[in-house]
Length: 237
Image (cartoon, rainbow, N blue to C red; front, side, top):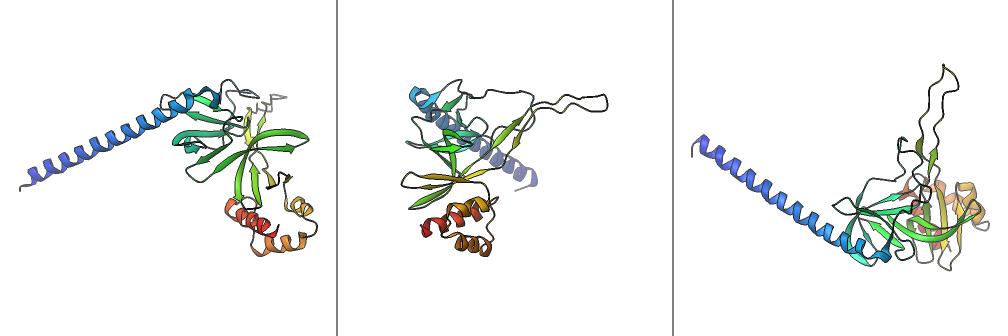
C-alpha cells in the first residue's frame, strides 16, 4: 500500500471516529435534556424568581456560585442533571441543554449529590440568631452524627472614590469564612467556626479532641482532613 492510500485510510478512520463521538455526545445531551425536562416540568420540584436577595450588581466581580454547572443527582430522580449551588442566596439551580434554569424547591427536594462526591442536604439550623432552613454540605455522615459545612459567600457593595487620588472599587462577591455544624441524629445541631468553638461543644472530651486534631494535623480548610475529625466525633459519641 503506497503512502497516499495509507494517508487516505487514516483520514477516513479519523473522520468516522469523530462522527461516532459526535453522535455519542448528541445522544447523551438529548438524554440529559429529556430527564431534565421531566424534572423541571414537575412543578412541585422547583420555584421561579426565588432569588432571596436578588442580583445586587450584575457587574460585580467574583461569583455567588460555589462552582460552575456540573452533573449530579437529585434525590428521588436517579438521573444526571446539570446543577450548581448559589451559596449567596442558598439556592440550588438546575438547567437543561436549552439553558432553561430553575431553582429547586427546598420543601420537596431535600438532598442533592454531585458526581464529584459533594453532597448537600437541607437542615433546620440557627446562624447569627436567625432560624434558617437551607443547604449544608455534608463533610462526614456517620451513624450517630454528621459533620456539615455552610459555605459562605458575601456581597461587598461598590465603593466610590472619595477623592481624585482614589479609584472606584467595584462591587464583588467574595468568599467568607465557612461555618461548621455537628448534627446529632437525634435532631440537635450545633455550630462552630474555629477549633476553640468546637472544643467548647464537648467540654468533657475537649482534651481528647484537641489531641486528635494535633496528632492528625486536621485542617478545617481541607475537607478530606476534616472528614477524619467528623469520623472521630461520630465514634466518640
